[in-house]
Image (tube, rainbow, N blue to C red; front, side, top):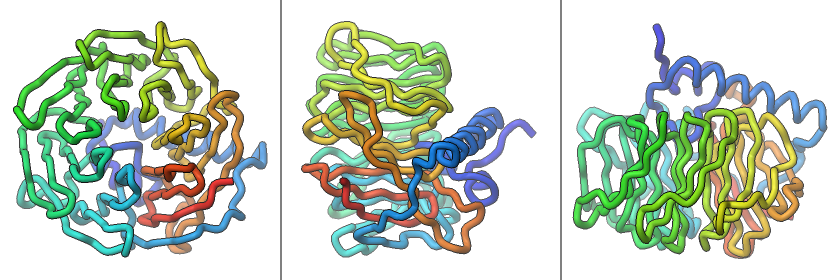
Length: 353
């Protein structure tokens, strides 16, 4: 058998891969994910850098059986969780209550593989392997639905009109969800694994199995630059103002680049063999928060790439092994607190030193 499900990976051996909410993945991807987890745990053990002493300001249990994916709204008010064996649910984090459940088709519980909120928090976009849906966050009303094969990842523009859609068909598409039209197609040589949009609407960033992270100009669809990270891309992210780009390769380096010109290197995060699953730049671009495939949350100084703080959230005592993927995280506007959601189904709020 040459394919497995992330549900098995999550519940039996290791947490889910970034933005794979239960979709089928190649055995090679599963092997790489497990290797990244073991590598990160080894690094924590050797360097003593992963502290479990940090106490959360708040803790919420969102899924007793664990989650295979999550998305936190930029304003920190809403959360989408893909619960193992259940529907995706939208939470109001202000009172930690479920607002409603979402799914694309009857009988497809657990089928959502990625999701993203608009910057204003009023639009939610979800994808399954072969469809994309747009929702009004407050009411849960479906405002758009399109059949679309071989999807992998999604990002949403600040105004909620456009979606950047990653695909196994070696491309990402910048899609107008109001008019239902493709605006730009961004090509790669292999499957696109991660996508990001800048909050100011200037840039798209795509990462693929062809080892490249590529920046695109949304004013004309033109390619700005590409960076070869010498292995398959795990995660890409952009700052809200479009000035900084993050790219990380599976079990490899993570680089921060300037989006200007040819994309000069700003810093290399000061750790090797690291697989990132989630990331968020602070509003002033001085701080970067990242979540790993192996439970750890890191706070970095962007200019130097030096790690300021690291901690490993505890999991529920009955979860084995004692590990979790940090599926998503968000810094507040002052980078003083952080909200995280892990594959154990636990959400937490932290003070950032």
